[in-house]
Length: 88
Image 1 (cartoon, rainbow, N blue to C red):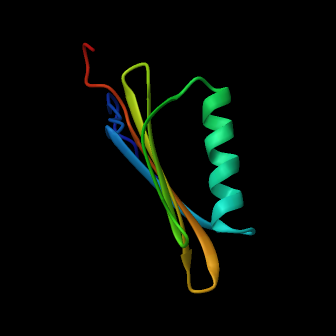
Image 2 (cartoon, rainbow, N blue to C red):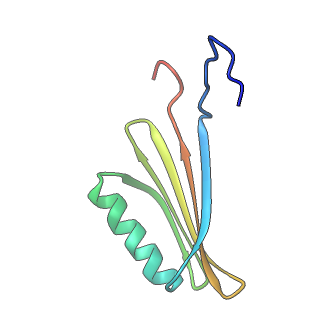
């Protein structure tokens, strides 16, 4: 791949990733919640329903949202991470 000299790569402020995992919505959500607490993320908002659970967190100016839901017989996890603006 051609990369011109002096290219500056910009990382977006918002990163989104999703995928399917084994387990149940409740189990995967519990694992995610415990892991984020161990990493000192602070919970901002939690929403829990039988087929969808959402966790919104913040740490050091960053914001993260984790959604765990049933989708087509599988458990789907989606992550969104927003980085701080420059200068924050």
